[in-house]
Length: 299
Image (cartoon, rainbow, N blue to C red; front, side, top):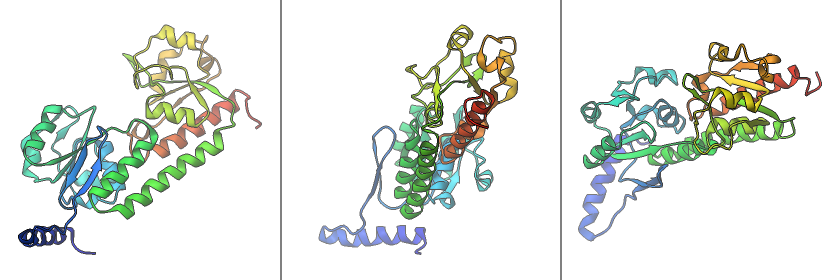
């Protein structure tokens, strides 16, 4: 395979020569991001920076991990990402640090990247791809888009297909399971949950769960203790058992009375990247465990 740096230089050289005849030989690469903006590159991205951990995982899944030159704190998967220089964190990024790394593509997160920063990057001539996987299939869509911008389409297509197949298998396996009322606790204080507009809510549905706050408009609504008690969830999920201790005294809640409170690995469930399929598998297995505990499936 032609070295991407050589390919880029050759592409520009040929394009420059053919301009004499008003021709062009190197077609631009274009993909739409989460804001429906067309991100256009004159040649495949060879220096990429990600501004969120899930974006790092998406780039690796797309086959462009070797092109990453920088990222942010907590970008620790796959293990190779831990060796990348950091340009900041989810709470703040250094424009100067980004510019020093000379990226030709920055993958930002719509909910975590300051719009002013993205505008300044674009003014510097740096292409910005805004990521925001909300629905589960958005992960596959963004893998394909990033693979196209990096000219690693074949690898990206394989990763996206494998991800979609895992989800399809879960849907087929669990669609006939008895429904369970599920409360997913994102944080205890303040108390936040998820709705069906979130990727976690979608995973709960995929596994035969009915999210008790699924109808909320916001992907991560703030809720009250009273609302949770009134919803009477049969299953309660949270990032850790310690966070579920909030409900120890509320035996009126079926999940507390029957001991169907479970921890879900937040590293998987909180990152809308390719490992979201693994998180969905964990949620499905947990709900199946709850069905057994509640006597809803044969032992």
